[in-house]
Image 1 (cartoon, rainbow, N blue to C red):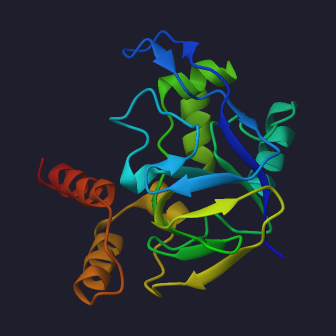
Image 2: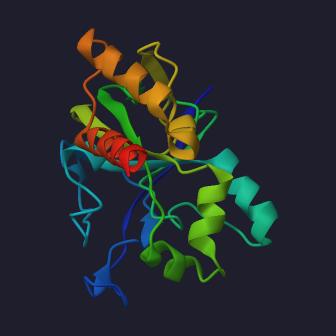
Length: 215
């Protein structure tokens, strides 16, 4: 059974050498139930709203199975929240989720998979691992950002159910690792048919992909 292993929110803003000056990447597990609204988890914040947060990045999910992979690679414990995730899942293939896939978490919360996480300098400083951005990207285990379709209250231990899959076959991992024209066309056709509504981040990725092809 797929479940929410841990629910994480910001512990405190930390000073950071990036352009914003602070970061909210320090997420820690909480024991109590928390309400989730369209802008995210109650009590959580994002310091860099340009790249994190907002309606299409209201939550960030990362799988326990992928955390264990990194534990083997890095020789250290990857505790829930260390990667800045709000949701640490278990038994759910987060990276194998189709873009536009929908999950029910607990009794009422419904979320939609929107786009993969792009590693940044803040993430590298958080981990303190050499060449972390490249290593994380090369592994193609980015985790997924989520949009809140129906608000609800959740807590650790809640079941997660896949309630809808668009059927186009473009996953978080495949788009992150090898976005190409074929996948872009597939996503656009899926949107035109009404099967998905692509997040602005995906549309922007498609534009960038096509700009590169014309240079």
